[in-house]
Image 1 (tube, one colour):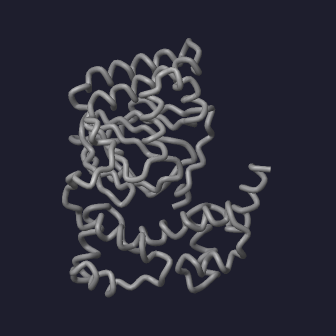
Image 2 (cartoon, rainbow, N blue to C red):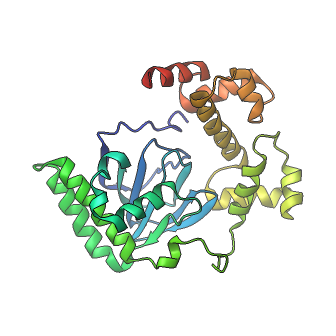
Amino acid sequence: MNNLFQQINLKPFTWVYRRVNEKNFQGFYHWHQGCELLFVYRGRGNVIVNQHSYEIKKGMMFFFQPFQLHKVYVEVSPDTPYERSVMHFDPLTLGKNLHLFPDLSALLKQLQNGVNEPQAFDLKNSFNYMYEVCDIFNKSLQTNNWEEDSQLFLMQLLSCIRSNIHDSDLETSSNKKFRSLHYSERIMQWIEEHYMEPFDLELLSHDLHLSKSYASRIFKRETGSSLTEYINIRRIKEACQLLQVTHKPIELIGESIGFGSVSYFIQLFKKMIGTTPHQFRLSHQTVHK
């Protein structure tokens, strides 16, 4: 797994139009520097983000915040292909004219920076509109001013999201009703509180009132990955952030995120990120000088 961290080359956006997978789709946990909008034409599976699991189906739109760990887990076959369009974008660049549209500007800021905001939107009632908007935008990139068209496209997507949600969906309220959590979501929330400690499956099972074998099995079934994989990825993500924003020695960073062995930490980091922690830190410092 050498593409856990996808450093998107913002131009200030990248666009993938109607990519289709009919077999061998390898979902993986990753994050991006910019925002991501994912629109689904066809597919069946789950999106794992912010310790929540959302169903993938026709007409779903997903919004991922910068540096937010997420995974697209899709059950693919020739009879159930996965087809989607994806845009990664720099919100500062594409949103620079949104001040002229205060409601859309507020929506983008809430989606981008909000805590516990909804990140999956069922746009099935607007599917034909979304289909046409994406198609027109894709064609416009061949001939027109990409900067103007991409800003207009973002506004159209935000407007479609806004028209398909209720005001209460983007508000925090003590009276708001919440759905029951999947087992995997409960497990991910537990991991979020304990990933900096040595992992103890027995303690997890005890705290969540699950057997050890069932906890492992249900997490794999609902997310497509093992507990060990998820915990390691969550730790490496934290390591990346610490390497970028602190001057802590590498061995202390490894210890602080639950790795007892610095050599194992370095080995796992290189396997997942494609470079050593030291090289990662130097690369980031060079980019931001």
